[in-house]
Image (tube, rainbow over all chains, first blue to last red; front, side):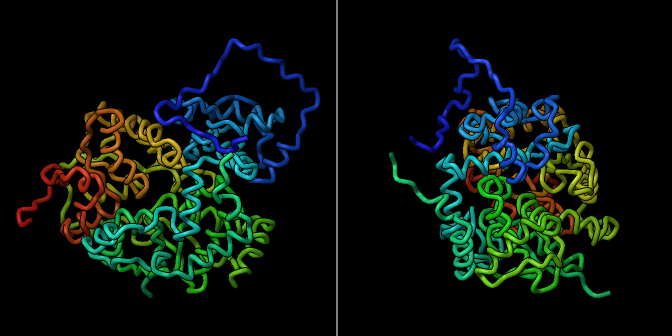
Length: 197
Length: 307
């Protein structure tokens, strides 16, 4: 199984929303709540406050242009449909603007719920390749956007500041510390290149 | 009164892509008698919507490592980036209130002989300027008022949201950022989509730049529908990158040309305080570098005859 999600370059709305395939009824008398419990522990403690009013999706600038539907994802999570939640590409269209969080009448903190579900997705190997590369940059350079070209240093000189700023770009020991942290938390393994299957 | 000092958290985008913001911040804070101290060995904050989405504990640990640098020196942190502010402020807040997370983070930090103590606060430039310097003192420093210049705002998200947590401004009707920008003498131009996200955050720009640019384009179109503006001011370098270099990308992806001058609030204030654009390199914004263009000096009311 290829665990990495792919977003097609040109059209991001290609994901089929409805189909002629027969959809089985979600017959769940007692939902498996292990996913909900995991989300609550991973940073979305208020997920069970949700009563599905849809204020989140109605406020969502990402939902206005993609198939990202906060309310739907939360409902799926509450039904215990873990695999559907964590494998969905649209999970990654939230810009974390927190508009839904500021408007939610139930204090669900939907942004935090989405971030928690993303944590679960990543832990289970669902991570976009560009995200993986960004994470790797922090482990290599101490910065997600590194001072990786001479021309960036020239730009700094041009505005009248030192060519290399006093951050991890100057101090190699800072990068070493980040590497040690990543090793301790297992983050290095989480974001390393996986063998193509 | 002792001079107020902040550790200056640079992050990634300001020092590595928009160094003009770094220089402008130094000019403005110096003019206002506030010291900015180097924060040696600080790393990526790390990006809240990116690393916070990947692994919360790793995110909090790396953010906490940055916080320990300031704790050791005993001064608060200030940053001019909404993302850096979100990571450092949120992590600081969460670690002060969530013992379980704090224990995990400190266990990780022990590997590098550090410990999060929770002894300092994190300030956005906007809050430091608004609360520590104060609008009155800022107005006194304005020697080049932007009279007649039409200014649109992009406050961005993370310096004021989530509002229940940040507790400083009404995120549906914010006034702090506007009041700060209005000290420049520019005329505030409201537009419908002023408060929507620039589109870059939450790892969306990295995942799908075209979708991220759709947000930006919506903002530009909304501003044009409101009659347009001579500049757009933001308190965040990632928003600045998205709005500034984003115009070049929009042209590529959507074949539509926008020409807005985008200023970080400290760049606006540096100019208003009488500094010349060359003193901090306003013309080095990526939009100008890539288009081989320059700011619309006349619209901004700046004479640059000596260039």
